[in-house]
Image (cartoon, rainbow, N blue to C red; front, side, top):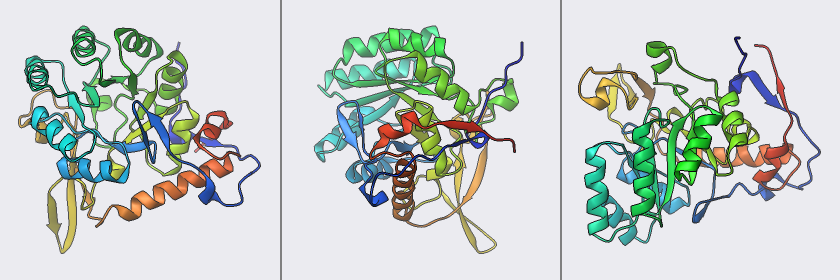
Length: 316
């Protein structure tokens, strides 16, 4: 049987009676693990999106972040962030180098507030072993596991010990997994399926094109949202600036691309150039203003209103 599934562009939310005098009254903050953040969206933990400066900037603004795991000294990064009075949020894989990094953190007496297990398909035996190891060695860390795309996978990660689950496979702008392997699920269906299956928070990862997609993701049951291309191209973003015919761009590439791997092996990502956009401040203000508007249209005062928003399918 072939089922029909939906992406963010296939649906809209139905307005309710607005109960606030001004959308500025609407609260967009979210409790996620041990901390509360100003917004429920954050940049992808990709080498072409975040670097140490990006992470520090977001932490100081009260937004969540996750540092990528590629050629990063997790010990040094964790210590540096915590010495600045900020929280440490790192990414790890499932191989021996991760075991070494975790051992070094333990030996140094360092505990990152957040650890993200970052693998292409976390519904696997290696991820299960690593999740259980991390929970045993770092019980004080909030553990995010991903990525997965089904309710059954989400339930397994929850049972293995994840404190939050990242849902979305092959939905990103520079991900070509669906082209190379044939595997993918649209994000509305993925997030609804996963969020309904577990009690822990679900992070909707990928597929954010319009600002309104934030509200749609939250209406599907997500607690947090991760986005890559949305945050690429700014001063505070990672990536090299490239000049072409007098115009400036920044490189944006997938974690499974040859540009990140350093070799053309098991490539499931590509590189594109995104327009250089200057300071990220304007984007962050606009994202917050737009989400405040979404809350007002949902008939509420905070993000909980979006959980009850009615969703309709449209035909493009």
